[in-house]
Length: 322
Image 1 (cartoon, rainbow, N blue to C red):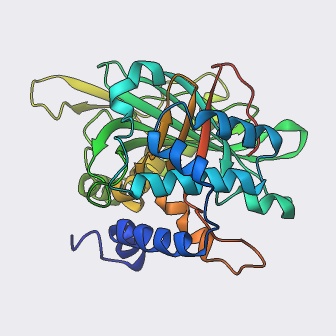
Image 2 (cartoon, rainbow, N blue to C red):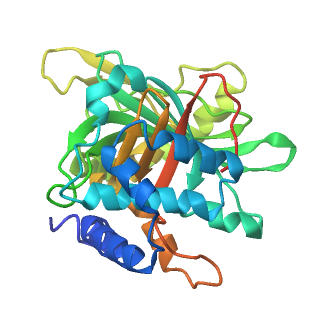
């Protein structure tokens, strides 16, 4: 706890759940009352809401009707009368594949200023058959290129932010990378060999291995000429079984160590108030996006800034802007 709150950023991360609940209370007071039919459909927690949601998205993703559906879902998730929302872990096999974010309470209102973003996630399993998520966020550049920021980790259950709240998942991100191109790389795997299992270990590794940054840059340069095995080291297995892992000094490894320190797991804990795996629709929240709703009203309308809507798309679907 002391390590978490050492700096103001870590203090913010440690209290993200409380601030998210407080922002949601303000958004509920300011929101327009959803129609009774929407509230009833949201309370059912099933396919009855998928129709109105698809219709609203088809008309115009930035239309008020989308926000109305999201507000109805949030109220149903907060109601003690809600009939149990689907937890992602219960339908994981149906979640496998690519999910494209088509609406964001934080980013969609900023489109009128020419600001946009591409976000999608790939759901699958790792070599140990554990549920994993690859998350990719792309900043559009000229000629169809994107500056991609990507991360991946294991998907596990987490306690809800409030008692009786919506199902919540935690993504234990443990590899980070960046790309410049039309598409990002898929999951790059555990480049840390699996021995960095928490923030404290990542903090220690980042302190004693700053040379990774320089070696990583040199290795990237040598890789242009086909030298892919430069700066490899054998690291003992954390299990103490006598096995070793090969690690390579790389920009990705150094970025991973820094990101694991800077972004505690509280920032990747996401409530999922609505999930219809059959229709391929999901409404989830990223509390880290919530502060966008605190911006001046001439810049951002507020509301459920932490909420996002994702649709399931083919795995080879081209990136699309929110």
